[in-house]
Length: 623
Image (cartoon, rainbow, N blue to C red; front, side, top):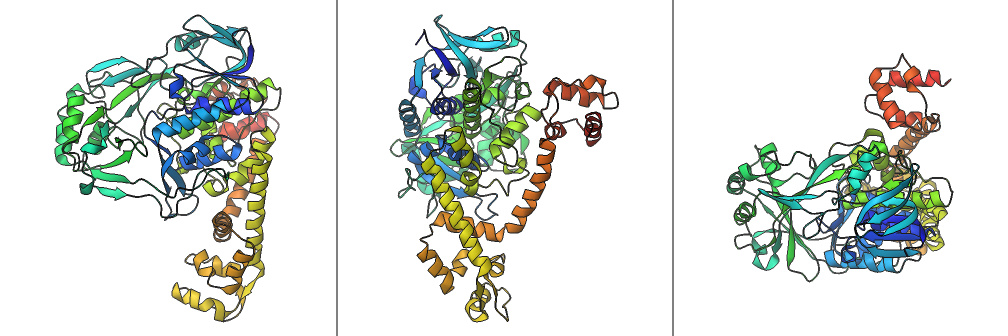
């Protein structure tokens, strides 16, 4: 091992590192995954769940490209829910509750079955950089391993500092030591670094809870799954979550510890995730609310450990305990461990290219929380992209970049490197301007051909996608070409309080009505016969329904995306000298010089760059 020169070394085996190592190895690159503890590969450090609003779309995209997160989410799931089902399909977001131990085990077993992938347990303390290019890593034991590219996926470990009340100690997460040395070296190399904070709630003993006092939260009656592959199956049995609420009494008990809270006494200076605030932050920011939801989530099929979602905190453990005992159903609660906050180093992602390679050091890639993101799904998608591009760089192939109209992953990467982030970045559907195109149901249609070209998605996977796409297209054409009589359709329309028709008309128009769904259309004999004759499954039927009912919106977004693509095609020369554009604002020149956008479209998305500045740039480039 120590005499080999690896194509790709991945440092850290969380969600980003695991996807990066799998992608690089599956693309034929000799890959080494180095982590401080091989027992904690793909550990769910925070909540035991994958997916959710916008995050579920990302997991589907990872799966469509040939990553592993969707497969492991299915094999370790204990509950499935499709969120936002009452809204339009652009908002539908799959989510699974996971078995924490099985999730990590399934990830490790998948990685061990991956060709071209070696493992090593050690702490990486530094990089070997020669003439502006990374050539390997060195460990805390003094071992050096050579590589053509390195992907850093250090999570919360870089100078990690854990806070519980007025106590603090070094650590990457509970029970694990922090990583030192890398930040200092990167700063010496010219990188800008910062500090961020995240937190986690207490874990409790389910045997000490009274679930009869809580509101049960079961999974979907007809659960789906994440992966498009047929090697995984939907759940037939599910575990319920439960919900309770805080109260004014709970809030008062928590406030008693605010003077010992590192968030309020100034010991934590870094910013935490805005959209996943701690319980003390919620009480402080939303003082008008007399209660907050708490979701009580099982950690697996057989364990009695529960995760208290919504009670993230860094208050002293006695304050946490006393307050939680005043929550309905928690009167006799026993702790497995208290909640805590953790501060860690990150590197503002404007220092990266779209490939996630750093601009300063050739062959060095960053992925995950080191880039200022929060969430397993955001990390996993970056790991996948960094692993792909590290492998492509070694193989001297063109880089792989997803545009904003192609994937949520494209939105994520573009947001990070174009706008940067000063607080933990989390994906939302609102961040994607083309979310009607980027639905969870069509991620395979959008991305599997790309995954196949990369060598990640198999031919079998591609063929299955093509068959699904073709079947849905044919079913849409059936509705466009087949007419329906008033006698057939009017009883259906009247039952839905929709205007009856007086003469024969195309089924497509009937189906496109807002209050008519596929179950209504199945009442027409020719529709039910078509479904039976062509043996259409629920995936194809759902895809057809979306294509019919949202065709106008989809077409409009495609046209808008085409206009954007024209700007994406206008490249800005490398090392363009913005200082000579005196008619451009000073702020715009500074931002453009710092971020070095590759296209006019990317330049237009930089905060502080106005449409007038873009006009100046276009004129100067002869456009």
